[in-house]
Amino acid sequence: MTEPQPGHRSHELRLCATTGALSAGIAVALGAFGAHTLRSTIAPEMLAVFETGVRYQFYHAAGMIATGIAGLVLGGAPRRFLFAGWAFLAGSVIFSGSLYLIALSGTKSVGAITPIGGLLFIAGWLLLANAIVHRRAV
Image 1 (tube, one colour):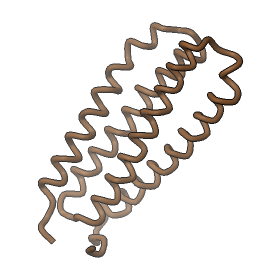
Image 2 (cartoon, rainbow, N blue to C red; image 1 turned 90 degrees about the vertical axis):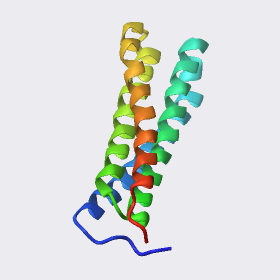
Image 3 (spheres, helix red, strand yellow; image 1 turned 30 degrees about the horizontal axis):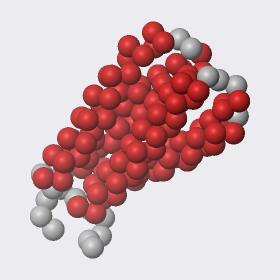
């Protein structure tokens, strides 16, 4: 394992991993809220929508953590790693956030933006792959 690469982007990469960890913690808290509070207050199909939001938020929180750590450890093109991290964060806000709104408010029209979040998730994974391919040899 190599030491983190010095430079002004290392702070941003640590922030990416930290934000992912915070998002994972929020996802766990929301999952518990759904399981213990919402289960008795919203329709089962809306609970399933809420749980989908939680699941995808957690997946992409883990992706943000991995992205930040990979950028620090692999070195090379930190901006490429950061683009992936931002795509995961934006995807979480739009995809999971819209599902939370649908489940809690019943306003299904918000679902029109959900696919944008899904596209950001896909972009994040593709950007992460690109960042890994273009890393500096260590």
